[in-house]
Length: 620
Image (cartoon, rainbow, N blue to C red; front, side, top):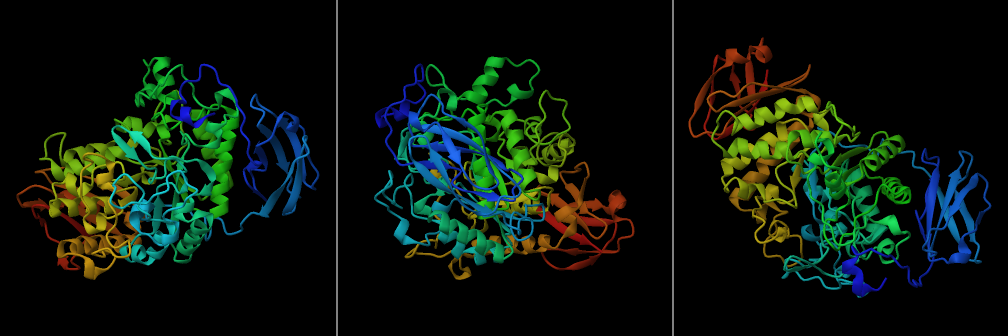
């Protein structure tokens, strides 16, 4: 299709396939022997109508099926790889005389040990937008063969030049902070020109406009830089989470510029956006038309919506996700826009990933309006028409509850009581410990601003994040008190990390570059993060909470080895607690150690909960 109509891809009353001259491309680009997923579907692009016959002659490789869709530039070939197949290269011949060499590699024996280890509640995840974190390689900042050629740090909507090498260069900084896992926004190619979102001309610096699922963006350093980062992290005992986007692609993706088949995308007579209402999935009174719009509606006109109910589309995404896991050895996936995807597809891809990599972790972004909505998309205890198999979700209800707990005056259902009530509804989840909990991310107001830049409130929120159930996630810069609201756009909460670029006036990667306040926040996070790494009670223990009284919320993290008592008093008055109320967890205790101060105190029946504090006490 001509580029002049790319922004109007939603008009598909009649799809025509024009000439699309290009070299032969094959997806997946390679595969492995010894895989449980041993039947692969090759998408061969850049062929013609004479190419529809395919032949393969290699021991252990069987050609099962060949299909050429209405767009004759594509052929799909289904191959079966026998357990006896050996690593090597083999020739695939096309009916038009063209051929290509396909590579089989041996599957890694380290999966589940030194790679693809999974992410758990004893980990601390650090979310990075690479373009805004650090520039490790100036040579890839501006590349003439890219649609968006310019890096301009003075423009908040442009690329700034941060890259994967910049992340690798700062792994020691992150490990010292207590981070065990790095999650980056998507790193695959976003070769798109700047697009209009509202009144702003935006670059795809965030990574969510994918145009090639098998190539890490060259401005990020390419596949080699990503492999180097993952290997470096693993050598340091750290992990990598990759950000996936199943729901949509960028409008310059080859399957959009040259549609394989008419129903490759969700098509509408005119542009149709999603209604964003997840209630349609479990609402017993929902209209089917509302559900169709939720799943099939587009996010924006320049993000074509993938028809994941199409088995060829499903195979393309599933194979890519398995390919990336095995190729790079990543430890887990965070799935963007999870709730907008076809439900059967979601279960299918989760099953395929866990079958191939039993230790992998997957959690989905389900930005929902209710706890029921969040639980619906994970393994749950709901009586619902469809049962999801996702391990956990990004826990938006918990996010709101934590911020309300430190911001609001306690009432029957507000303040600390909202946090208590939210956790009481964990009965809806199969395993809430697999949810990812957070204070903010790249799509939200910075949490420091959300608590009015009140450092007491900020520390209480951070303390809750690092002691509550679930997998905690920090957004880059939280440790140096980065702030801002999304006003007028997301760019305000995606500022460059100071010190990530040569010539920056300050370097917050170093203690000498931090203010007293910034260093205080850094030290608080670091001390608690390092403590929780060795805390069995927090990392894998149980949670017991007590109904808040006098505005004070008390909860315990405990197992057979350790008991941690957490006392939250976000109010403006000191409160003295009767310890005897908590005898169920404190029976036989004689003293406690304040985790942050290190001070040990004998336990009596009177425990002071100072105003504006979260005490984290290890019971002896």
